[in-house]
Length: 413
Ligand code: HMG
Image (cartoon, rainbow, N blue to C red; front, side):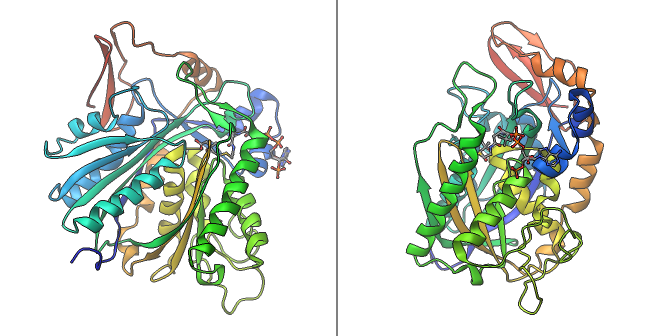
């Protein structure tokens, strides 16, 4: 009967772009101390798309292995979360639907609220499956984070997509019903319709994020959600991984709990970043809630906006061997702003579905850009007013082929 089976994430995949910019190269070109990026922001590299890549190609690359493994039966909904959409009207998911040969008997729609909307999509998917437990929902979060050249946001750019299959009796995570919510109209970060780069008040964005965490956590308690002592790991939206550390310090303050706040694995002696976080029951010192293990992929991806929190989930699932039955807290934040704190239980056997090898291979396979080449690509904005064919660059499975009659064309690479 509807409402009795656990519902959550049955399968998950992460994809990224063809290129990478190394922050060591970036620091050298800018005459900046590289420690500012590695320690100050907690970032080592950022993914950067080739001219024939965008949110659609990364999304299709993330979703393709999920469809290959699970088939399409019962998938009647595709929810595409992004804030770097390719059209004001048509959902980016339509191109994914076509590239993956998904059935016609589907609804396809795009969700937007900065980095938060993937969580809204996930919750909507849970709602659909609650009503129709035989259905499954494909949720895709895909973004390219772009700031103006020579601005403080520039080293926090990035690109990536996470695809998730939401179903009853999931193999990875059972999402729990209680959420803490917080919305506040604030101009901390936005992208006007006529701009390809985001506008950001960096200092305000950091405080707006932490205020949303306070609000969402307070509401979780008001909704009789779990206490901090009942949450084993915590994932945060990661615009840069040092922000997750700031959030962890903030949550420790809100809850009065002694939480490990080291983002570099092993720095506090509680973990080596490759094994389990300790649940902390019998170990002295701050409790390890997976901050170091959940930030490993994002240090190399950069900000992937809607996908970022779920890339953090992939990193945790792929590096923590002690998650079976444990409760994970998720803090999702989107500028503008919405914050949501929800929880999920990890299903025993999750470790049989590790992405560690494929994600590491994909990160290692990215082709580094010189800073000159990166700046040229950044500046080369493609207008939709003229027909154009893009050069074949990406080694990914799908490519953006160009524009014809103002419409974007995609193909299998
Ligand atoms: P900045 O100019 O790099 O700031 O901008 P900073 O000069 O204060 O330096 C950052 C940190 O590096 C500081 O540490 C410095 O001390 C440290 P902190 O005070 O933060 O602990 N530092 C060093 N450390 C070691 N060695 C050194 C060194 N030098 C300095 N040599 C800012 C930072 C975040 C403002 C900028 O990157 C930015 O504007 N980013 C974009 C906005 C952003 O990511 N905001 C995050 C919260 S909002 C959010 O998450 C939503 C978002 O994802 C969008 C959406 O929702 O769609 C962005």
